[in-house]
Image (cartoon, rainbow, N blue to C red; front, side, top):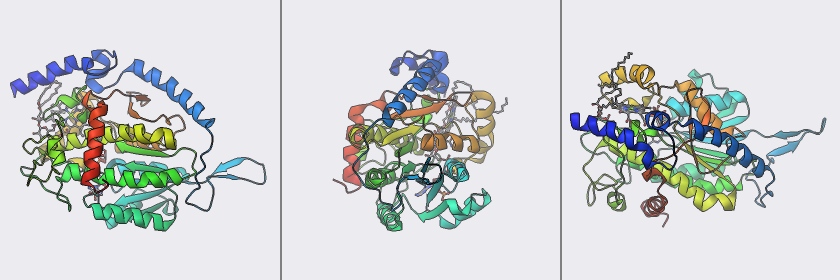
Length: 395
Ligand code: LMG
Ligand code: NDP
Ligand code: PMR
């Protein structure tokens, strides 16, 4: 433990070398926050959002009969139709808080893509979400068949898709042995990465058909997958290695259940899956942004220490983790606040820049954050993409 602690501390101090920015230790290694980056981000996103407005309109037609921008006859003012956003894992935590924040504006219809229909219905009701602003649709990300079925059902509903949020996740920190998805992938990588990878790859087509002014594909990342931060240096650290386990299908039979080919570790598998999420967002950006104009983004919403994510952790952890984050690291954020942050990434006109990993500083202002060396490795992103395509049957 002493050795582990020492390595955590020393890597925290050397962390800025890993990132590309010149952020100081005080800024970036404790919370991944850099104020200079923040200022830059604000200016560049404003500049970019201005540019985007002058872009020529694409020739594609919308999946919906009603155009995104309607002209009102009385005063000639342009009005925007309700946006249509799919959020996976909207039955609790960040997903639910985001669904609520968006539904309450009256400007969004939220499709809550959940594995437990009844739980989602109860959660939406208890949160007081206006009935007309949400629909629940079944999606189990731990089954590729279910993902394909969801996409079919969604298309049959004839709703447009303006924004897709890949939010659902499982975290299995106490598991001694791996468990697997319907397709035989280790459960956390299978659900958090591969299920979302297939969903996003299929639905990018739907996003491309939407005539909504700002179409976005958002994949939730995390600080713990980024080894350029203190949080990312708490063992076990994320590391995808040479992807040998992923290439073998992370099935624990003819390959390791871990992406890097190592011994199973549930906490590492989760962090690895988050690295895949952040790499996938960037690879989407490189492959699709220029051609489609879709915004691809990831984010770290803050440490939402009270959510269901920690349900598998030991009771003592669940008791101490929230006060630890609130009073010691100060990285704590409430579910409500985290929902507002993700809702901003969905709908804020100033957050249209693509390829960005958003974070928030202590005053809850958004800024473009720096990913770790591994989580921003373009070559690794390409490999994860290609291997994942094979695993989900797209190549
Ligand atoms: C593994 O443990 C788990 O085994 C695995 O299941 C998974 O969860 C994985 O990364 C996730 O972690 C890693 C190990 C790392 O963690 C532990 O052993 C358990 C630590 C539990 C931490 C949460 C609760 C802490 C409660 C502290 C008391 C809070 C009281 C709140 C009241 C506030 C009042 C003001 O652990 C390490 O490697 C330890 C390394 C420590 C390095 C620390 C360096 C910087 C220090 C900064 C401040 C430290 C704060 C105190 C920490 C107390 C730790 C018990
Ligand atoms: P929760 O456990 O509260 O929410 C996770 C959601 O994912 C639940 O709705 C859950 O459904 C759903 N889900 C799990 N497995 C599947 C599946 N197979 N198919 C469909 N849905 C599934 O956790 P959080 O709200 O904390 O997590 C949301 C996101 O935020 C995750 O991507 C996580 O990595 C990220 N994050 C969280 C942080 C935190 O501090 N909590 C920090 C940084 C990032 P059900 O309700 O049925 O269990
Ligand atoms: Mg971490 C310094 C700031 C900081 C932040 C912002 C987080 C976020 N954590 C920080 C520090 C520390 N954590 C320190 C110093 C320790 C050692 C005591 C520590 C421990 C710790 C554990 C055991 N932290 C954890 C765990 C978990 O099981 C959580 C995890 O890794 O899930 C994968 C977790 C988290 N800490 C965070 C965040 C956001 C998490 C949770 C979830 C996530 O990344 O999605």
